[in-house]
Every structure is written in structure tokens, then in C-alpha cells.
Image 1 (cartoon, rainbow, N blue to C red):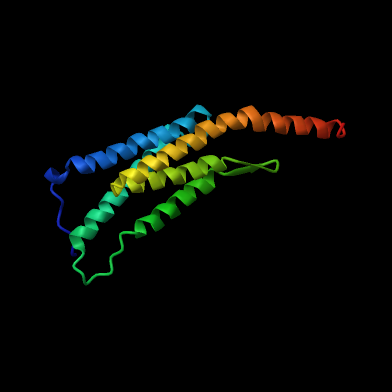
Image 2: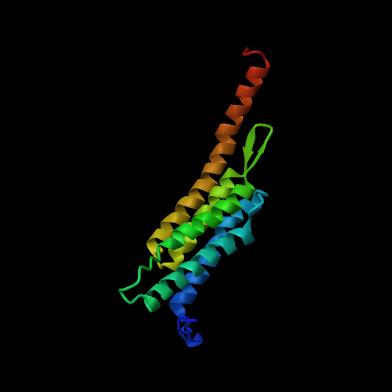
Length: 167
């Protein structure tokens, strides 16, 4: 059986550790919001998903650079296909419909975001990583506060009016 040559341990260098370490930390950060709100996919799930996506990306890039001879049809971008399919399976398991209400859709999408952030970390696309995490934090924290302050009371008021016959 033909295998690629082993990668010596001394090749684990600072850029690889940085990519994987940042992915793990950002995954934990992304999962913090879900954990604080008591959702099913929290710190550990987001951390592992983000780290795993980064690890797959680093491995795919390294294998591509190691094995590509110009005569093969290797495509390192297939990492997106595999990651998307895997996270889709996890997300589908999280989403629950109960009494006509859909639950955990934000958590499922958040896991997808953690995967994409992990891929970007693994590829060393630092500006993209920073923008993605900043937008995610804004959307999950600031918009959540705005929703609690303005949207939920408005929905509650509308429900009360409907219960009272519109008066």
C-alpha cells in the first residue's frame, strides 16, 4: 500500500500551533453565549467543532502541498464539503419542533459558523477570522439584548391584545 511519507514531529511549528490554538479558543468563545443561555451545544461542542475544522484544514493543505505533483486531481477545497455535511448532521439533530415552535435553529447555525471560523483559522486567514468572530459576537450578544428589550415586550403586548379580543 502506498502511503504519504510521515510528517516528523519537529515539523509542528508555531504557525500550526497558532492556527489550531486560535481555533480552539475562538470556538470556546463562540460557544460561551450558547452555554450561558443553557442551549444544548455550548463551550465544549463549539470548541471541538472549531478546532476540528481547523485541524482538517491544516491537514488538507499540508497533504495537498505534500502530495500534489501536478498530475493529480487533488482539491483541498473539498474540506468545505465534508465539514458542511458533518455539521449539517449535527445541526439536524439539534433542531427540534415542539408545539409548532422550532427550537435550537440559532444554535445549529452557530455550529456552522464555528466550523467556518475553524476552517479560516486552519487556512491562516486572520482578517476573515477577526471579522467573522466580531460579527458573530455582535449578532449573538448585542442583538440578543435588543431582542429582549424591544422585540419580546412587543410580542408579549401583541399577544395580550389578541387574547383580549383586540381591545
